[in-house]
Length: 321
Image (cartoon, rainbow, N blue to C red):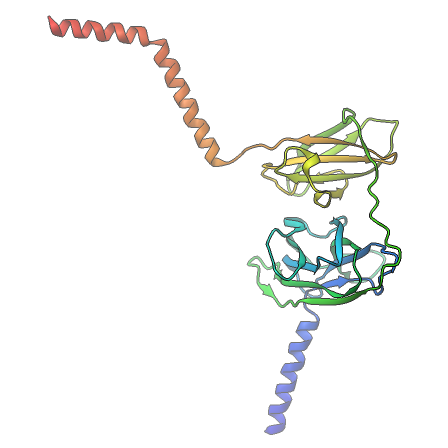
């Protein structure tokens, strides 16, 4: 009896561990060594679905603020279907001197891994890539915490997930190369055409952009998009721009944000094109209807004011008599 009880207990531990090993999880890929010449450091975050179907994810990536500066945040080739919060620097104030990058996304239909014809099964998919510039020697860690992975089962069942910690060591930077900011020159965007459309063939009738450039004298290096509240694209920080391709599916399908397009050419020039937001809020629709009704009332009152005054005066005279 003791042997049976112990065997069942060990078996339960084994299968519990087995389920955790083969459950969906985050993977954080960091460099094994950091160069003393101050070369940028790239951290890539993956989602490994294993045997699960993932419906949503959220997490926070952080690093010591005094040891790195953010060079870029990229979601190029990301497997996230729809960002609720695209990777961005958190505005929350913390006293641990760490910079935090938060992100949250969902997978309509579920994510079960990246599949291809060149290999069997599925592979982890890229969530995002953070590029950092070392600025101070020392030992620290990259941290991926407050993680949540939810199942694509229709109710968002919370799956097991854990924080990830990767230690790093920055050597004495003997010849730190400062980040070189190209002297890019802004040119007119008159040759750029940005068409906003929607189709049942694109992400289930979601709004998307098609970007064209008729300028034959320049070669496009890449395209960047920023969906922001700022109306001026020049006020948007560098790390808020997302490198993308055409067509581009809008993150904010409500179209309440300015959609800024930046075309960067190989010769160091660039141009902006902006699509203004559309206010589709129900509150403003109601206010608009009220204002229209008031306008119609004033117009009618103005139109028939003379007849009203004349009739009222006649009525008063008859009463007096």
